[in-house]
View 1 (cartoon, rainbow over the protein chains, first blue to last red):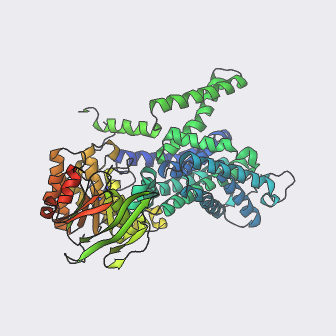
View 2 (view 1 turned 45 degrees about the horizontal axis):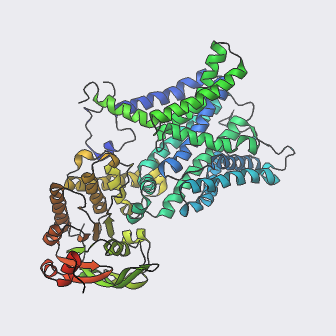
View 3 (view 1 turned 60 degrees about the horizontal axis):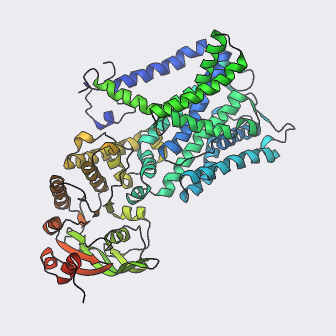
Length: 358
Length: 263
């Protein structure tokens, strides 16, 4: 009906290879982006910023990063929390070491530093696979958190062992620190996410992405067709860690403001991001977003309904939410083991032929 | 897809190859050559070492003894992906496609060594990266036409029936634009019609693109029909080498296939 590709005739390969080959998708994405950039900033308040939008943007970025590594290249990683910590501490050291540095450059460089650390911890992937690699990356998680607790240089020898994000401005408006207005931090994170999501889409549908997927699906055949496994795996680790580092830097500078590694970047964060991409859909950019949305926004929504609307006590609601989210995860995985993105893909295929499926 | 070799020149030769796994001798002192432009068949009973031979040729196994000469040069010990770059492609006995990817993406992966845009151009999908994608897409579309798989262009290959998967795998090897194509049992498990199609494709590839082909096959009627020369292995040793007619009359080959009374 409204979602179909019949009647759309592609006359060139570049038309067939665009990011969104179906006209409806193109328009939908445009409208969502316009809404997010032009409407939301005028209505955003502190509550929406701190508990809904910024967490969603930050965790989407992290999920995007892990999906590149695990979903596209097939290398399971449990080190996401540790890599986010690298991004956060890199941003902290850059901000305090070079107070004049533009925030955008700080964030990108934090990503770059995390990418290098990621390559280092990705080296075992050349020898070990699957569960064993997951255990190896788990080691990186604990090692990195331990490192940031143990070496005072990383937190500038502060007495509390915490790192705090100083105020930085962009175009004269504060985007970090307690005085930053909600719309500025929101726009800053949104812009980063949109740009990097676009880049992720391009990388995954091009030569590099195909080499990742080839390694994931059949590494021997990939090697025999000319894909060097070393290059493919390490580039996946690098790009993935870059995204996770950027997410960590955003999480610390914009959202938390002050952080302590054991608390902010613990193993639970690694699992959270892994669950996001499993539920959202491995090997799907869109899946990273819905996975993050489900695990970040669902608890907020349920809390609002139960506490705000029904007036139940907060502690009861807190426990109920845990149970409900757990139930949802099991339900979705039974209904569609390939994640919500696959569910959406099937719906799209049906919609294309609707109302004449035969 | 043209070789700069004259047909009749030796494209690849293996000399005195011996390969063993622990105490098991998979190949013993094997020598034969593959001439540019021919269809060379490797046959033999199960466990004769045919697949091991292909694995040696494309660098997956490194023989303990012997040499591989490719295009007149002695080949150093290389990794499989480096050998792919030199122009040797292959298909597998049990299909080794990238199951999560579409037919088109599988074939585009075959073009991996022909593309070179760096990560920054790929990230913004402009300039060299975009041009390269389009140019290689055009090449891949020729192969899709040639193999008559237009309708399944965007289907994930995991969903395709066996016969089509075999065809896509041939397509992926063709996309690499190799000088030498190694086919490991391209017709295993196919019905007569699919076999005929596959034979036609193999002969057409050989004819139109001038690609040299080495294939392993168990169906003797197919081998005798399409091969120019045949080499026969048994228990890791070479027991025959020659034109199909010579092989048909070779007593050692007949014994190996039909068995012989030992007294």
